[in-house]
Image (cartoon, rainbow, N blue to C red; front, side, top):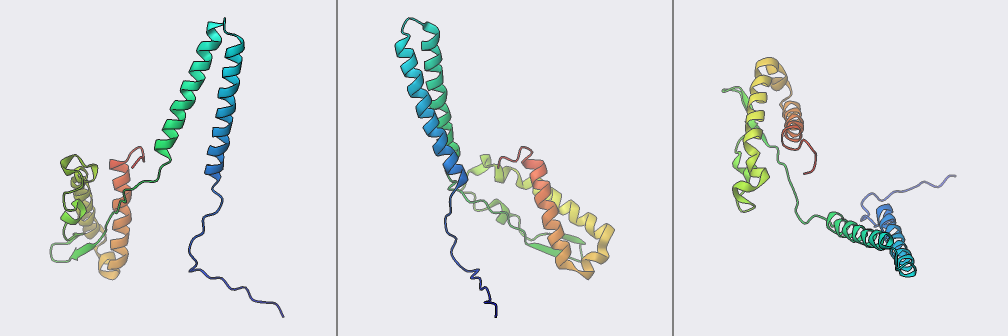
Length: 171
């Protein structure tokens, strides 16, 4: 009789070996070795201005790269959330969010300069116009399966948001 395998899918996630962490550590070790080798070579060739300049350039570039890694590889403290809660209005033939102020938030984040606040206008326009188009062209789909229509509109809105606001995918 073969023993059955049992899986516990509710286990807490365990931190395994992070490949990027090892790469950064190996790169840091290689940078230290390179700096030591460059300093030793420059020390034994004090008469050469070119070697002294190259050594200082290597040290500066490595320090700048390490500083950039320190800033870029830190985890973000900010959580972003995109909400999708649609209301289907059969009288006005619209599918849209009931209240777009929840998209904007309470206004405490960054005021008018916050990119999320600045882009709400485009999201409102995209969702309202696509909801009107959906009713005009495919009204039977909305009446037949409103949940599917709302989820498809949410996917369309998210893709449109990335296409309009995040052309370089940095956010």
